[in-house]
Image (tube, rainbow, N blue to C red):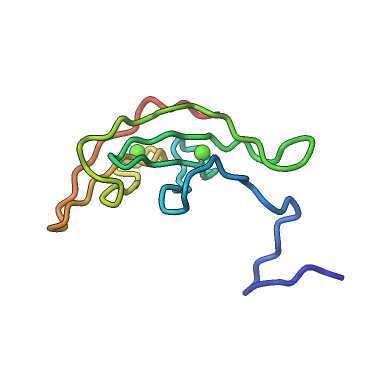
Length: 116
Ligand SMILES: [Ca+2]
Ligand SMILES: [Ca+2]
């Protein structure tokens, strides 16, 4: 039986792309950190610290390949809920952004994470 389509999307033949690392859903972000056009898997801590797994694409033996990089941001004193990611300088690497409760935003450029 063919897999069900959803609004024009075909289901991935690879199925699950990440099995998780023990973090809760509200800690996980999918963001392209290294500018290779593949979203990477991020886990944010309570104080805005970020651990990352870079997306290496489909694995040869099935499933998806992720390269653990460890902590890529130690946080800047803002809670997880205030952290966002956006490419501020146009280099295709998403940068670290804190959006405060009054709507003001501050950014930290991402210039250390190598492309795969
Ligand atoms: Ca990436
Ligand atoms: Ca950037």
